[in-house]
Image (spheres, rainbow, N blue to C red):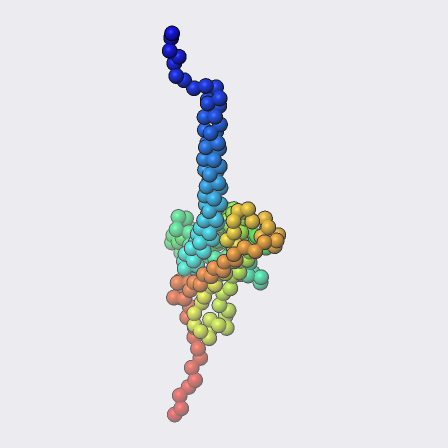
Length: 212
């Protein structure tokens, strides 16, 4: 008699395929969940980095400001006069001097976004783009500067920028925007003493005459 060769039956093959499918499904589910967590963390990090980059940029521009900044009454718009190192013009004597431009940041409370504009010396828009919004959930943006009386009293010029933004998971973004869920509200403050302005600021206080 011929010996029968050993092999797998159809039932055994089906069981193996079923077990393999379950293992692959579990592996795929674990991988998918880990990728979701990775994307959520990445979005949160990008939002926080955008705020830090914004404050770093404003701090650098304020330090290089060539004149007093302009802030609207609500403190939502900041305009910084700067020298353009790449473009030059001529003064009344015909000497080449760097041109002046203005760097402007404006917060839109309705849309919770911050717009950046580059203006020329006359105030015309050269460049405009959305700086923060979307992934970075900005709740508030406030600018303050030393008043003229305080400059005379304390003899310095200071600009303070305050930013409030949410640090929340991606799935809670819309809920937080509609005040239906509590997110972690982070308060960031940037205090700058513009270098050139404080160097050139000369406050003359009238002196009383001495007694004879």
